[in-house]
Image (cartoon, rainbow, N blue to C red):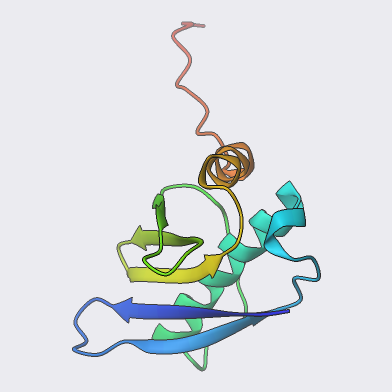
Length: 118
């Protein structure tokens, strides 16, 4: 399956559309691993759009703002925003609440600062 991602980089006047490959299941059958791959793919494509010559880097799923919204003609879209810009992917045929729960599970929780003094 190929998933299109619309990317808007800060400081640029136009958007570009790029593609994520390698997601094998249809959205209604996605697992947490599929959702993780979609989010990491969206971030990787943003990085490639900004820095095409840079080598692949590790993608950590933290520090991003995200939302799942209904799409006007059906399905839902995933929108993410980071300091680099924003990306939107979809629409996907999956229940909004189900996708939101999967995203919440796959995002790396930020460990709270310890209040213990040693």
